[in-house]
Length: 514
Ligand SMILES: Nc1nc2c(ncn2[C@@H]2O[C@H](COP(=O)(O)OP(=O)(O)OP(=O)(O)O)[C@@H](O)[C@H]2O)c(=O)[nH]1
Image (cartoon, rainbow, N blue to C red; front, side, top):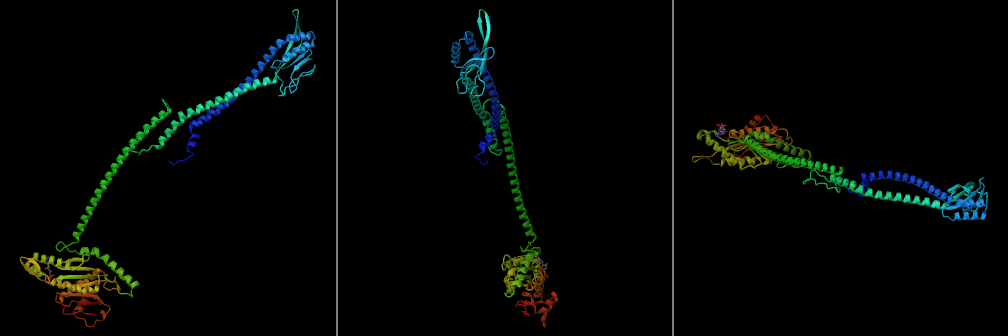
């Protein structure tokens, strides 16, 4: 997983615990504010009521003294009463009115914005806060001989600062109380929401992220730092059970896969072996079907399967030479020489010593000829005692020498036919080369060349045997006016005038050069 430095912050910002915290505390703070405001209003009213009660008590206490001073019209006494009252800390001022609401006397309230000492019929000033100070106005009665006479009113005005301080103190206590409670609650909630919700959920998320169904070991039990049974432990139990089952299924599947793969490998190996065997059998069959069982040489089928590619390569080589390098000598070692070889008077061996002896002669004949050629040359039993050898990628100018060598080798052999009998035989060889006409490599195919070689061999036979004849292309052939018997026969046989003959030295006719 890609590491991201901001990830923990993001996870905290988006965690359920944080969202819960945000929602709960937004609502809580709203509620706390409303509650605090209500409490403050109530506290204000209570302070008002307390002060009013207090003023009432003070009024009851001093009203008889004031009544006596009024009744006696004793200004000094009245003044002393009033000054005495204003000495009380909660009393800011006092006003005495007669029955007609005329102010008779007042006291208290200094000059800095609050009520100040005043003369008769002067209304007290307002408090500096602009509000009318808390006040209480009560009637003043003079009692004489069980008679109660109303003689005026006494107004007591509360000291504004005292009122203000008392209300502010109550408000401050309320606000501080609310803030402290909110912070404490927030911290407690944060601690427990992280411990009971955020941490276990993070542990579960981590376990889910790290779960690998293909791991060798089963998934570990997820330990949550939370006690008791609850939704999270239930979720954990379900998750662990699910992953354990998933891991088991995956292991089973992997084992099945492995087993299947092994079986496929085994089967593939068997198939490969069978295929190799089949290829070998096919090669053996092919070998057998293209091999002559008596001599071990190839048969005609082999030639027809292989010669086309050789002639195609050679034709291309000569065409390229003609196209690009005609001024240079023709390609070297790029010819096929077809030798048709036939044992002379073979029939007499069969007739005199039996077919078995004839077979033995053929075997020894082929075995000895094989030593004259390269492994890459094609040695073919063309039919009966007639053999075709194709010397591959040689110089056609050397063809006559090889034909001579064949004749000499065979003539020098002692064929052991058993029972102490040895035989000598000669052979007749005819050859032709591919390409027959180097300037037109495609003019004659390999079957034509075989045909020419066969006819050349026939000429060698008909002209005394134990010799060779080669049929070669010559552009001057058409100008031959005094053809020998061989030439006439050749021309007659192949019906083609683009020929000249080369004969072995043992033949009486010699070479004919056009
Ligand atoms: N033993 C044996 N003889 C074979 C085999 N194939 C062909 N022959 C014989 O080879 C003989 C070929 O004889 P001919 O075609 O008359 O020629 P030749 O006697 O060799 O005389 P020229 O070829 O004219 O020199 C026949 O008698 C065939 O029966 C073989 O596989 N084994």
